[in-house]
Length: 210
Image 1 (cartoon, one colour):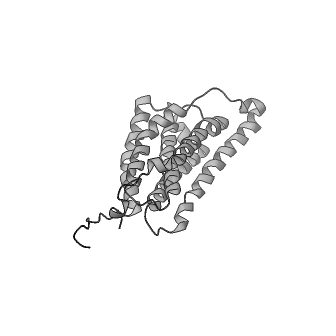
Image 2 (cartoon, one colour):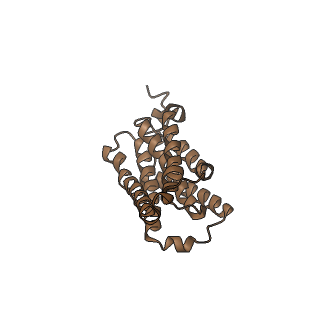
Image 3 (cartoon, one colour):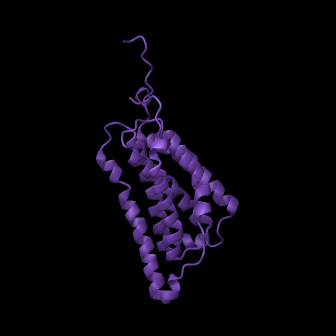
């Protein structure tokens, strides 16, 4: 029984793998933002409490969703970890809803007009490297909670890309944030979750996880 045993390669703790993922994802998103050119009113927007609150909620969603995804590939991970990203995600949605309401009270129906602004290419471009890095890291674990792993992992990558998008994308209207930006994040996350079995094809996962 001992002759053919393969050496075990224990995974690092989820927080450590999250740090490793951020070390890849943040520079990748920053390069896209810098290549496109930072928005000229960035300092003014960062001083806006509403904009700052949305940005913080997006970053917290990315961080906690990434942590939940890394935890989902470890056998015996506590179930509450998978719900941790829900709080900042709700905060993200709430701040966008508040902005839509402010647009409505300020401009009425004209504030809810939906211009043809497609944010999908920018979010996909900024999120492709974080998404690939996330999938590669998730494939090293056990397929304990594959749905949660892919859902939160993809959401983390898309949220990180969305945070970068806000640094160079000029459109801040509430309806644009919900339909184009947040809508792209949801579609990106949903499509990846549907193909979770293809994305997380674990080879000899039992020998990789301790």
